[in-house]
Image 1 (tube, rainbow, N blue to C red):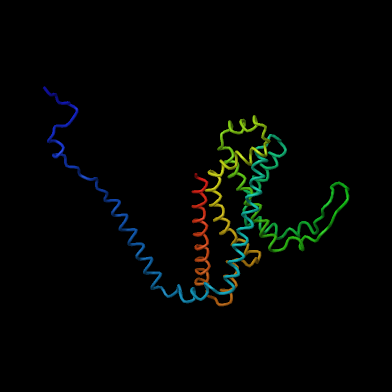
Image 2 (image 1 turned 30 degrees about the vertical axis):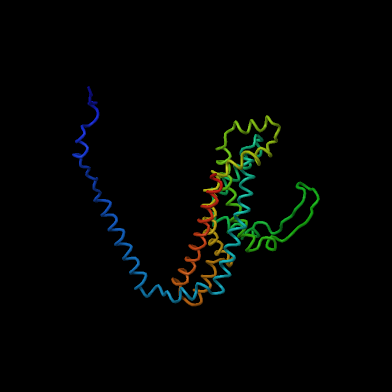
Length: 285
């Protein structure tokens, strides 16, 4: 004798079920609207003569633009390297049990994150108006080791590096601090119980694990740094944007030249984005 489970459908019921997919009219309507807007944009880019794509093409590989691009990349790499190193030091100071180090780090981060980057660049460029000379020595009447004119030490290039790198260090400090705090404190205590110093524990145990948290925002910061280098054009540093300004101030072709510079920014940003993807995948292991 066989019995049927009342919770199971009868043998022929499965064929009688007709599944009706849920309709999404809003999804199709939004798709049509987006495609229509994209078609209008492409049509405008092709048919609008004011874009002057011939001038864009000619400007794209001019010597002035390429030199400006090389300066932009150089400034991005150097300032990011200084910012990362400075951020690690500031993060360790912020997490230190020493209250003096912790407070100094907090004040630094508070100041450089709380003031506009453009103002900081202008401040370093105009530092000579505040301090005519820079003296290295022991304070309060001690011996002096050397004195230099501020305008000779901090020129346009140094002002650009100081403005970008010191600002970046403040943001990197918070990123590194978040990564360090994401590592279980028990691992730190275990390393200390094995006799490892705090610095060795940080280098061998904490930072390698914190990289999974640190890398994604650091990649974003590198992309932001690339774009922020355009701010140094206000102090006449010959970066990519300043090179474009030099060209269109002479030819009066403002829009085509800016489009050529923007395409270079997009290309370098795309390369950085691809590099960030592979670095994240490496540390994600």
